[in-house]
Image 1 (tube, rainbow, N blue to C red):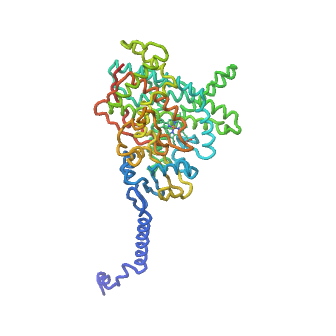
Image 2: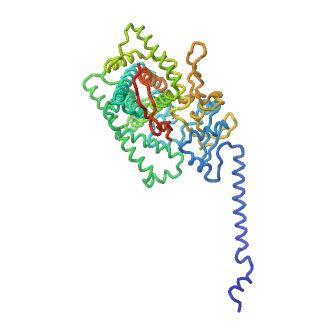
Image 3: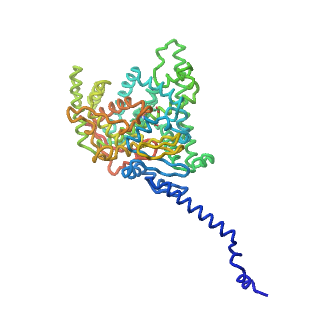
Length: 544
Ligand code: HEM
């Protein structure tokens, strides 16, 4: 009898590796190999980070998530279009104005917000203008454009922006006296939140009152914004949402707070409208943006009013305007202040423009400038200066305008803006894009590309916006300077934002100087808006 060992040796090799099994293994190996080759072949012309089968460039992107805008700058300075593969989709990033014009204007209908973006942002933006396409977008655009063009709103905004800039000034003046460090980004956020609530919805929420009250709405809104941005690179977000765990559980809590605040604003506004009607005082119905949408909702009909009949649609309007008007303007003001602190020659030139403007306006108005020595006199002088900042006069501050625009070129409040793709298309530079993917124009990268702005693209130089002779402001093509987007969906609040920013900055830089707190880290945080991760901590002093 043979031992088990001998039996094993006597067995044909194929008993351990059956023939059919080997064929299967070889077949699988060949399929995988050809799949890898096809994958490599299909990527032969693709520019961007290395892509691996199935996971694409996820690992590299995750590793660079905290510095994603600069990571894209590195790739886009080598190639004007780069593609980043992700599991089941791919993102194409563009920085060439010719491609941007194609996406934002020439073939506009092929590049809507799209379902992917919509599904990620729905919890925050709902059906609001930022998240809508087609008819729903057109109706809101029409109503909002009409409002923004109205002289009523412009005059009202001028008064509100001046009032809130003065409130900010008196907080700074107190901080100065107490030698207190302030976080300028936080103060700007409070100022712009109060302003948008007043101009947009006719309510006074008082976050900029002297005691700087806690603001749970603002905190919850920021948390929600960060988490929805994370969804773009977190393949597990749907699972977390389903299980109510991690970031998605926090998102749910934050949204509850945000919604409670928003619905209370709507209820308050509706009650005020009813009260004004009941007392026969029609003129008391204010002409803020929310009231206009409420009236439209009641009217229904062709103007698209029927879409705003319920509180959920109004909630979407409110939150979209908060995101449009608050964070964008506040972050631009923060980066501006940082640029002025780190570019003293620019700050000096700006101060000279503001002092000359003040003298000139006082002459025009026939008023003597108040003495600024002493606390009360200083405050009076600031108020006097603010009163000289009429809507038309603000337009004369050309260097300030150039400084704001230069800030937006390097630190655009919306650093990247993705669009969906309806049908396969070929971009003007020959890049093929697939239906269902995403194309993103990247203002942050575009502003830093030498092929767009010349060899000094990375330098902060407001003079690039001024003509050599006479120093008039020179606009750039909106497809090259994309901070406000371009084409049919160009920002509706651009003029209003410049008005508010220039009003606040004129007062701040006429009367104060800012010094960054030593070792305070200034870097961006990854969210839809380019805000500063640690705020902007400064010491303030007065200077007249
Ligand atoms: C520095 C300030 C601002 C910047 C840089 C800015 C930039 C932008 C950008 C890039 C978009 C396109 C966003 C997208 O496609 O999702 C946009 C859209 C929009 N902005 Fe602004 N914005 C600013 C201030 C404002 C203000 C103050 C308001 C109004 C109160 C406003 C109202 C809007 C609206 C309503 C849209 C949507 C337009 C549409 O989709 O048709 N923006 N803005």
